[in-house]
Image (cartoon, rainbow, N blue to C red; front, side, top):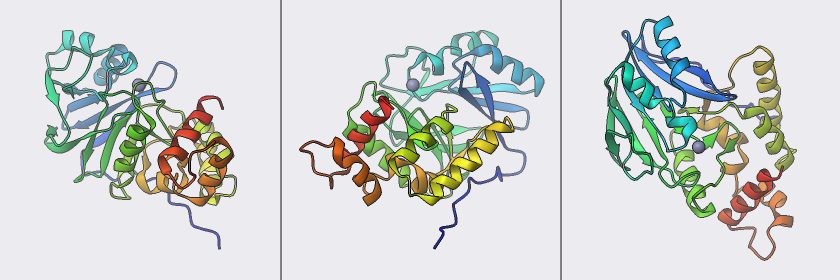
Length: 270
Ligand SMILES: [Zn+2]
């Protein structure tokens, strides 16, 4: 039986609400959440493209949201604040000194009137948080969960990252996943190496190649699509365990954290 691949949801958001990417640097996306002439920006690593986009779309900046301390996510905040003083929401425990409204796991922050829950997702960095709106089925997850991949482990342990990804994988299947890099084609090449027999993955790769040829972003993704195709969310699947087995040494192949650690390390040298 050929499984029907889950597709990324269309942007069927409430009337008047828009979520759009502003491309920055080589492959970053700075997400804007906009409604009624006001906008929130997520992880503005660079101010110039944000200011240009706000001007073009006649939007007034309402707030800034950051997921973690890396420069390509916070580097534009100071320059944006010079244009307009707005709250900077971000992790409470962080080396980044620019957060004015600190948040911790379990907090709820209102963005343009929509409540977003704060999830702690350490692993890529220790301060990393994600913002989830159950009402909108929207997740801003920074560099934790990528389309068909996940962030590198710069600060956290494999166990921390695996727990963070498991938390995100448990969100409702229709949740749209807004990650901050266009890494999808490279991630899919690796995912195919891990799971050459995964048909949903083959179909996703063809679709993503076509999207990139048309110059379109491959994101947002969805939790359903990630569950079907992202090897880092599939460490308990027999096919992924099988692929990890030669890399595990003495570690048991039925331990999803050991499998995760093995394939994350494989991806680093892929
Ligand atoms: Zn990062």
